[in-house]
Length: 378
Image 1: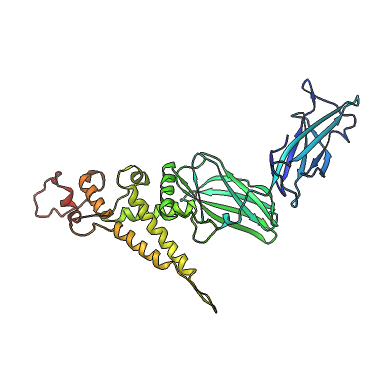
Image 2: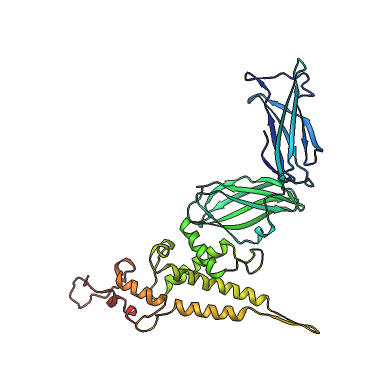
């Protein structure tokens, strides 16, 4: 048996079974059989050797390494491994398996991502390229209280562009909906190195809001590797910032993301608040990329900050709309109306007053929300 997909530079254990009624077939010469050969897409032998019997499983095993300069597979041209065993009666047994060779499943732009976003019920695969082979490497996941919740031994996946690629797989359902810190620790000749990343484990409902936000803020679906493109982790961060902004307006609340996702009328304000944060980031990026060019026959000016500034202003007008007297259109007015309609579910204003020279009594439990929070009437 062999993995159906191997990467350039990857080392893998292959195996073959030669049994007769469950009993291993005795080779004519254990030094020569069973032997194997690995063929590339052109049918050329890349490596060969002799398998070793695993006495526990009765399976022959060998270790192969795909060259870093190997030719990759195509839909019509595969790699193959062929085993041959000659038994004590000179009867030949042959096995042949096909597999694919590809470049490692890694893109340089992954390292530009400051956060990783995933769902709790799916595995998360993380990669780390380093310039030389590590003498030791580990991967740990920590909660926000610095408690380690997961420890993984990364696997070397291959070599790509002179970098050694290591992979850590976070199993499905091993993390709950929260934010985690992840640390790669590895040793090179120069000493121990540490690489940090953040993992956001989100609920499925959050992905819908990510899609809604992308539809609003990135209609042209810009290339992610461009400085002005958006990753899902970027959009998720903007959504959390937007939720914090909306919770701080008019009256401080602690409404979770699920409240905005399921309460009629509150989904759009969350998208707008997230877009406000996202375009603020885009504005800074656009400012870094402003340039003017003047040639003999051509002049060019690139400056996106103007239209970004206008849209940021329109979004803020909506978010803060209705904050003045009488409420009105906008999220601030919507939140006031909701707090008036459902005061018992949103806040409690606890005020203690001195009882000196006063008759002791009970407070008026029927006091309205407006008397306890007069700013709601402004």
